[in-house]
Length: 147
Image (tube, rainbow, N blue to C red; front, side):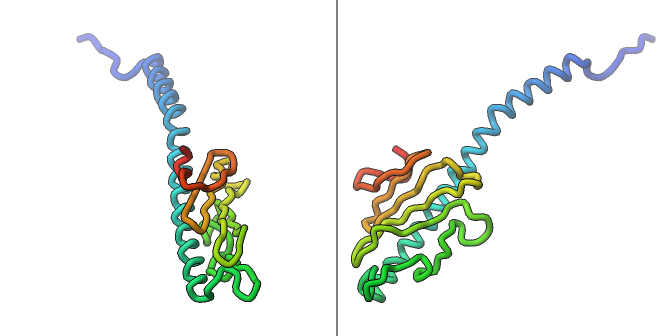
């Protein structure tokens, strides 16, 4: 009776390791970008909720600047971070505030996974924009998909 060795050779194992390494090198960056897009979409939803709170503030006070004092994020229940609890990925700021208009900008935190992802901008007209790696100005033709 002849004994035959069973199992894999070292070459076969090395080929499998190389294939798995190549697949991981391709898949991991794609996964990271997917996570980044999901976190950006969550931030956009949070900004829309803050915009709703701003409109409620205006209805209650008849202006975004009652008594000459501009509305603040604290006035609408925000601590200025997105998400509002846990590790901040974006910091939110209001600007160009007068009685009937405002602009909200969410800037990625430099030490977060969103660093370098570009600012999200939303204004009182519902116009929004996002451009990867830079800032933008919202207009009737801009949007949050970066196109």
